[in-house]
Length: 301
Image 1: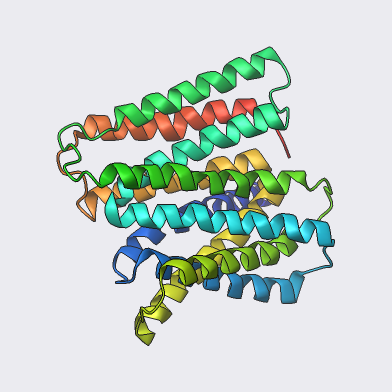
Image 2: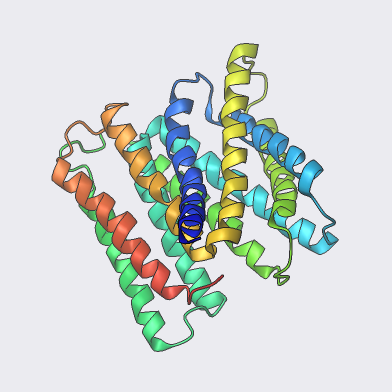
């Protein structure tokens, strides 16, 4: 009997790690698909929408109109954040973007959850949360590429785009917390989120990507990556149900390690970076930062 429970626990861990693995590998796959950032976003959101429709068809239940719009706008905000990442991938590099973007997400989500949603309910949690934020900032500084300064003056612009669009990720995480129903079927919420993603991506494409075309084979490849995103998003919701919100988030953060190392060792980014600084930054950001994040979430389930 104990063997069964150990097997079940291992299965839950694998489900929890799966989203991070996919989200860590996806930037590498997108690197080899020759489309611009908006077409990457369109393919990703269409793939997620396709998967969410299939899941809703088999598992979906009714959703209140208020909750629908909350998750719709949550998905639209995600598209803004994801667009900023895609712009960063092509102009700054995957390894830089992932460390900075994810660090900003953890800092922003911690402050929003701790202050706005009162998850830092006492001074002890507040102190631990602030320590965690400082640790993450140290990780960002530690992993900075000192040997290869940004020679392109436009890079400052792309950094600003990355920082500004990360607000979309904060809203993506914060808005669903408004939903108070603990018995809600999480898979149901994936569809309104996906619809919000598609609509926001479509608006961005109409505004900034008019007149460009892409051949069918490239579009299909782009859509396949989007479907992988959708499967990972569903696995993340499933992981929340199986492992709890905190553990699901922490396990998904293996994407930082995977994407950063793939960017450095496969895409050959940041050739001048000292390996000690690189690994030090990863450890500070992922392991220590997440440790303090878990301490400050008051064991939400």
